[in-house]
Length: 338
Image (cartoon, rainbow, N blue to C red; front, side, top):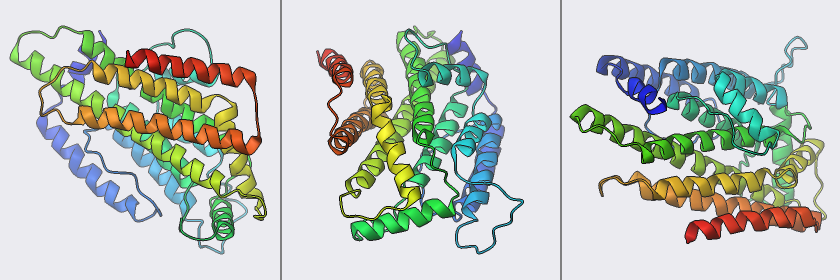
């Protein structure tokens, strides 16, 4: 049933797809100049729902970034890139099935998660929005500056964005991205086990859907890798003797929470699942995104482990339960290699 729903999405008229792409390129160009950073571009056909969700989310983010460099702070306007805003971005860019799937991971429930949406465009768009907003929190203008200058600059950047000191803000957004990674991996796994019909349309649709899912796994794993790498860089600059502002301290706690809450480990396990389904894809040799997705998942695993290691060193932590959990994660990886 899932594959049939996906096939129906692929059968959008060519004219509608072309029209949506033209609109998206104009919207993307309009919003791009509003931000100090950008995500690596990935060509993707959006559904109308996904396109509208992306437009709404970028409009909200643009309103927040517009605060930067402005001396005007209207008391009536209470908007910032805080936990509430992240929750709104998730609400705007997800449907009810995605929310149910996400809740399973956020609450760290045991057992299989409920099925997520079949709307791949929405999964991609949601991941893109949440990754962008998370990287905006971790943005460092000059990575070659001194540690103190980096700390001061980042503290001001966070203040301008109206970031609060909620140490759960990164855990929330990264867990939502992980949920979408697992959802897209589940779809790809279903496609791997589906015997597509021998008709020309059936084979063509199956190949197109497989390639689409692989590109989503590639994108999400790449974004997770960038997030963990950015968080690690910030932690490395929290050395003793550096004066840290309140906003920087809040972000530091949020980064540490990625390890202590098990979010980094959850990312590793989810990326291992991505490796498993990618390795089972059987497509022609020119299907080059398979190798890129595989490498991207490996990069995400290494970035998550590296961040977790730095957090443990900074906390000087020796949590036996956490050690056992990480050993289980490494066992899953060794099992995959066999």
